[in-house]
Length: 263
Length: 263
Image (cartoon, rainbow over all chains, first blue to last red):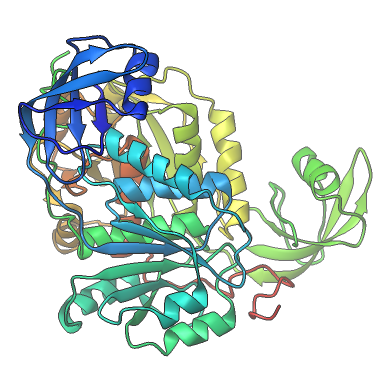
């Protein structure tokens, strides 16, 4: 397996970039690679490149960029606003939502939010790892938590909110998204907003329902856990309004791993 | 929180049913409940009932069924055929797919399936727990693993397969599902088929593509992990072809836990 690494430095064919601490640890200690071994690099801006290890020792390493593999792409402008959950659930949510192409995560402290602490650095690390492992070319932004009040009062009205609403009136999500493609102007900036376990407080839901840029949607007859609801809304969004009509840009596995189906 | 338990016995108002070993352990040791405490029972056939603990000691318990809470419902006839994955991924898949209303799980051993052992009893326990915690009224069936060859050669052609296909020609899933609603006869029996990490072997994909009851679908431009792909397909299926237009039958939380939004 050829390692695929996110790195912050600028990338261009011919460049030699220093391995940062994370890359050094991963290549040496986790993957046990050595000088001359191939890897794939991306930085979220310059595209994806084939590279090789020019040098590697305990303290530093250099990576030589050899070939452009894919030009930079982007994901739909979709922010996932979620109430922090228990550790396992939020780790899972960040990993899966990164795979599903969310552009940014916005934690929101609601009245019923139980998890009081949120390790943003860990979530960022999870997002990077998920992007690395699933051929994504960008890293989603993980924002600092804000209160529900701040979220609502500072919201930019041109960004439309798809509200996961288990209770009260709501269109089924597929119908709601189809209607939004027809009716909303400036339909290129979106958010999905999901509540905590136990749901939004009724006062929060009432406030959201008065806002012209909020569309409550239903996710079917079962009560979904908060993380499941967020991912369901995201999957359906990408299929109907997002980039679900695109295909993977190249065969499913990295260079040299049998992408042609040979064994 | 009022415990909600799946139980195998028949249920009807007025009945007193013995607590099975699992119910006994859960009520006594996990939830520390005692005689007179309320609970909710369902068995996948008779509906959902309010009940109370008639007696409970170390060795046995009796549960008195007091009131019908919901009449029995069902989920769409959708089988999720998946190649066994690593323990965490398959546990997660069973939990989330149960929430999302899959009717049955069919593990399939493909050429590239890495996980050789699959603890079916553990998966069944996970499915029961997910159903209990998310207000589902049925328990999905977890079938014994079969080989890819057996799956294909014994398939009932009236059940249509939605094939998650990362490589090769495929319609975007939303378009494919909409087309299926228009063209397929007997559209009430469905399956989603997802490959292992690394995907199907090319010979398996070639074989699947020759079958008239298989529709390959695309899930967007990113490479999804196997469990993410299965859940994405399931979420979009329910939204477009399944029961996604229905709403939860009652407020979001069990009786007595503040479902009306009061604190």
